Amino acid sequence: MSGLKREGEHIQRLDALRGTTPPRPHDARAIAALAANPGCTRRALLDGAGIDKDAAARHLGFPAPFGQSPFAITRGNMFEALVKADGCAELLRMLRELLRLPVAEVAYHDVENVGAHLRHAHTRALIDRAAREGQDAGTLYDHPLLTLEIAGHTAYLEPDVVAFQLGGRFHIVEVKSFAVIDGQADPAAVAAAARQAAVYVLALRTLLEELGHDPAKVSHDVVLVCPENFANRPVATLVDVRKQLAVLRRQLTRMTTLDRLLEGLPDDLTFDLRPGEDGRPTRPVAELADALRRATARYAPDCMSACDLCFFCRDEARQEGASDLLGRQVRDELGGVASVAEALGLADGTRDPAEGQEEIARLLRNAERLRRECLT
Image (cartoon, rainbow, N blue to C red; front, side, top):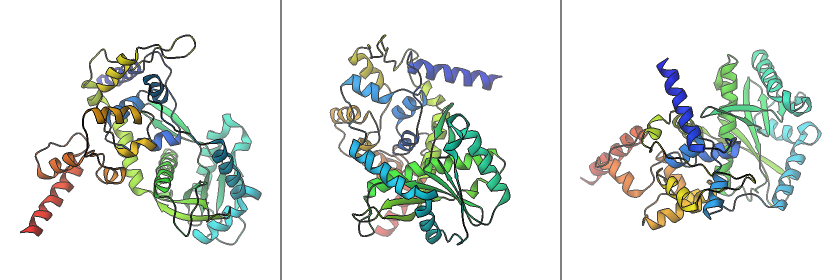
C-alpha cells in the first residue's frame, strides 16, 4: 500500500510540475533525444512530466530551429516510397544481400491497411505468430505500431519496417534520406538515426517479452537504408545500436524513478506555462526562467541538435562561465558526465558520483590508476 501511495504522490508531483497544460506525447525522435543527454536533470523532469519544451522555449524567447524544410520532407517521402515500392521489392533485394535471406519469396504485410485504431493489436498478433512459428522465409511488416512506457505515459511508435528473417531474428529497418557518399555518411546523422532505431528495438523487445518470447529475438543490429552517392539508388548497412540501447535504458529507468530528483525541488515549484483561452502561455517569462533554473541542466554543444531548450540552456551556461563542456560522443561514453572538471574529479576521487554514475566513476578511477602506473 505504501508503494502505491508513493507512486500516486510521484504522479501528482509530476502533474503539478506540468500544471494546467495536457501532457505532450512522446514520439520516437523525442525518446531518442533522451539518450543524447542522459545526465540532464532538467530534461528528465520536463520529459517525465510531459511538458512541451518547444512551447516553453518559444515563450522564453529562445526558440530552437528544429524541423525539416518542405523540400527535405518531400525528398524523404519520395525515397521511402522508392524503397517500399512493389511490396518492398527493393528493400527485399538489399535484405537478401545483407542478412542472407533465402531466395524464396518473402511475405509482406502492410499493417496500416487495417486502420489506425487496430494497428497496435494487429502488430502484436502478427509479431506473436511470427515468433511462435519461426518460419523459414522472412516476413516484412510495413507501418507496424509499437508502444513504449515513458514515465507512466504510453508512447506510440511507428518504425519504417520490421523485418523478420531466417533463423527467427527480427531486425528494425530505418529508411533515411541523407546520402552515403563513397561509403561515408554524416556521423551526426548516423548517430541520430542509431538513437532513433534503438527506441524501436527496445519497443519491439518489450513487446516480445510481454508476449512471452525471448526479447533477444530482436537483433541489436538495425538495417539503415540511405541513398548512395548523388543518386536515389538505396544502399543498406547494419548499424550496431547496443551502446544507444544501454544509454536509453538508463535514461528511461531514471525517468521512471524520479523520486530523488523530485525530492530536491521546492514543493511549490511548477513549470506551468499557464496557457490562456487561445492556448498561448501567459506566465511571466522571468518567473518561468527562474523555475527552470531550479532544475540543474547539463548543457553540451550537441544539445543544439537534440533539445528544444538548447538556446536557453546555452545562454545559461555562458552566463555561468562554463568553458570545459564535453561533446556528445564523450558524454555518451561517460554516461552523462558533462565537463572535463567533473570527469577528472570522478577519476581522482575528489568528486562523489551522482546517482547512476557509480559504474562510470569506477571506470574512470581505474583509468586514472592505469595512467599513473604508466607514468611511474
